[in-house]
Image (cartoon, rainbow, N blue to C red):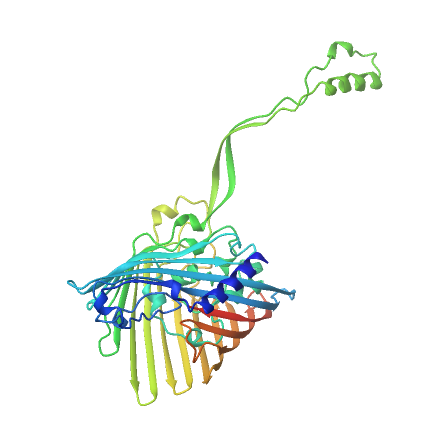
Length: 488
């Protein structure tokens, strides 16, 4: 209740003070009255350089943005267990922006923090704040360069149906599905995205089933570049030399004790008082007297080391991801399209040190997507092919018929302050089909107001189905969420 009350008061404070406290400027006096705007992409929180006002000189700006989500959820999960609850999540993005008019560049740093109110054991506990990324950036007319712990361009530049969804279009609903209790052989791709993004979003069943790992706090180090927009075309590339921390994918299943010293079971027994003529009662009394003199002693253990470490998930290094996007408008039609992909290698020598899963398949995946907006209607869709990315050879059959793909399609209608959307997502991984049919609605309470943020009430419904014809297992469930969302 403390978390809910604090967040509610915090949202009210933002509304009352028009979020002015979250924008601190140090601007040359000649430009103090000029409007400055930064267009944040909410899902990825990066700055588009072309939207920075060109007239600003010697500017230092600190922006605080983010999202607060409070909702009630009702679930009928995969195991037909009905449950409900109230959750509150928050994401805070801190960005420091400086400019150098002589060089014509903007530079600074960005840090994102998540405070999820989640207590399910296969997700994050509610008592911690988690780093969702930290990077430094330099932006100029030649493009945007960033380096740090961040998502790759294959995640930032992709277009798919989930990005146009009304309400809350995140993956928060997946934690109430019960899919983490699936059979180990029923692997699922639960959300559109390539392999590296699936790890960060925990949108693959074999990721969310790892209960003792904190993936959200371990984005890989990347160097990324995004080109300027040229006649609607934009190019991006990211490079991660070491990928995700391998400790995220390790599980120690047994240990070796180098030295173990057990205390004596019993001492001080008067054996001289026992002879062949002693009765059983006399013998018992001798041992009882010895037991009364016993004192508790510790077991001495030295040198506990892992003896068997299992490799739970494929890990790659030297990952290169790239993206190409296109935006064009004519008459009342806006078109967006993207092609993204990633490629990486596993470290064979490192994998040989594990007791289980000695090798994995090569990382190679791509996705294409497009969206078309006509007046108040938006249609979007995407297709992704992950191939055998992330497959562990001792877990899956060597059959080439095993590969992963997904597609989704959705439509959104906007009327004044309200919007409604519906979408369908389907994926196949290791003979397991996963379907998600969703419906979302929201109502914007901040239109025609002086508020800098977006304050919405929303509702989302998901019906999902999982089926593996080889194992002859299937199941379905549904999740409904109703709440409020404030983005600033």
